[in-house]
Length: 309
Image (cartoon, rainbow, N blue to C red; front, side, top):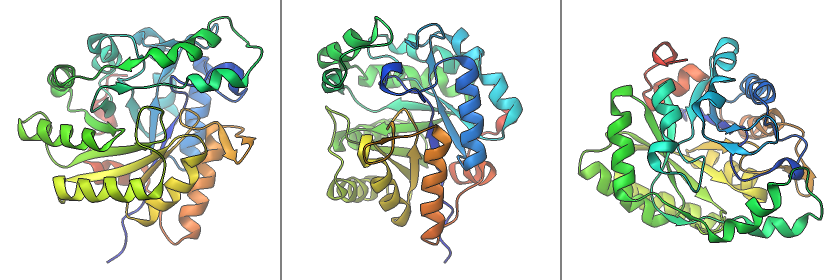
């Protein structure tokens, strides 16, 4: 039996990295749109999107910030749009789902548990910063608890249910898989679910291949054939874990949200460069890369004609 094509997701900008860390990190609407379109042209079937303040690159979850780039992306590419509902570590779930409620994308992310979520060690790498907000934002992340309670998850699921949005269930540790199983058992989510295994965030499970195998084996036991899966490796784990996942029957996620690197010690020039690299690896190892249409079929998406932008 032929292996299914590998779906590449590209996470364009995120909420961890700051402009000082890489000149390639997009934060204006023009740059976010341009890099998203280029990533799609390079082979990404899904574009995972956060918004930024255009004046200084700060994180924002204001729906108006998304409105500045979503239509441009849809006009220029057939890629699936996936809007984050985790774009802030300090806002409520109602505030975090506001962009998805307004724009009704085909997909959005949904974190499956509360956790310590920190990137404060990055603050020690830089002596000067482009913008005043950056250092404290990074250094003080050691006090973050990323809240995703069962009540929050149920709230998001119920409010977004009328929009027929497919969730990317982000699982940062093995307990999050059990949380998802419980939520399916009480009727919040229908099979097949789409799980993003996330490795290498401080506060979550580490980026070792043994942990990928363990997470996959646990998901097999909990969900059987009722799930599809992808892997996100943070930082230097991005390409090694994506390569491994692609050969285990999984899908992959790359992008400057997750890693600023294209090789050890070398900053990526763009999101598209990362997409092109993982696409080349996947194809060189004998697998195919999914088109947006194939990704919609694999994940059972509602289609781009039913979004609100």
